[in-house]
Image (cartoon, rainbow, N blue to C red; front, top):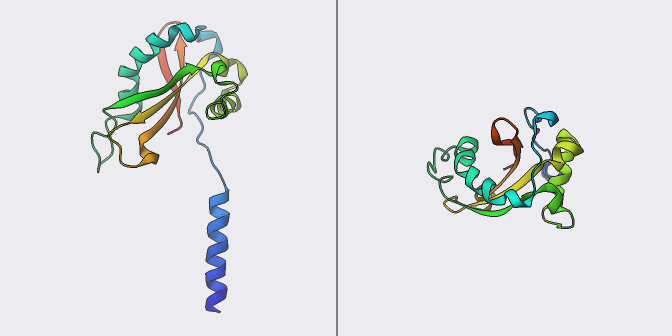
Length: 144
């Protein structure tokens, strides 16, 4: 009986691990409100991150109160420029699934490395950005 119980626990763990879930954005951007951007806007995106990252992540967690205060930009590019890059193209697929191809094509992927975060899971961040015609750059989805 004890062996059966252990076997059931192991099987249930494998079952739980095999299901992947993704968070959904609370609200998709409105296509008509988005500005068309290109890789030429990268400097502007990098500058906007100084405001966007604190708004999106805050400063940290209870045990690590300043872990989101320092970061390095790993990637900052329009989603169209991720095509062909195995490490990044999947995010483009997520953006298309969440809010449609047109929104994804006007959006950017920003991948971050938080240098004060303990461990790889907390140290990596991915955000989806777009530029509003009236309000400028904004984050419409935070993956990590």
